[in-house]
Length: 179
Image: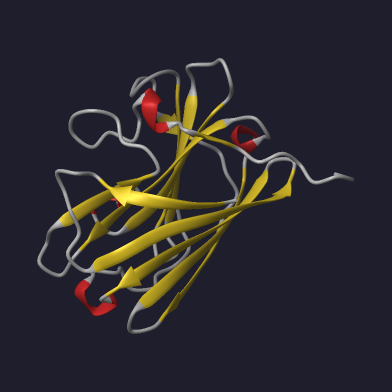
């Protein structure tokens, strides 16, 4: 499935002309995501490559995110993927409450960049990603000016809030036949 993300209306992007994500099922609890950013890539602050390790606070700069919530529940998970290859994963009991680290094997994160585009490829496995889960696919993009834009398939009213129930607008794809 391919989805276009839009910037929050109060935080437009200057350097980006388009941001989309492609999501594919790669196993019962595994998703592969390809985030594609088009525009003036030199005008963005993209973290330098680092060790692929769990790191808090990635959302404070350019970071690509995935939130997943089982159908009918209040608990959800947040996954952060940085172009540096650093990552984070958290579990919440309900809206912004009960936050704790989510046990997760290191996701595969690769970045390809040109002058006018870059792709962040991610493969992540977690029980929260089972078919039928509701997801929010989001991104925070920081520009060289320091301005940030907040991208999502659907924005809740008010300030940017990817944790808001209205952001969980996508259903995780079903398993492929034979899995």
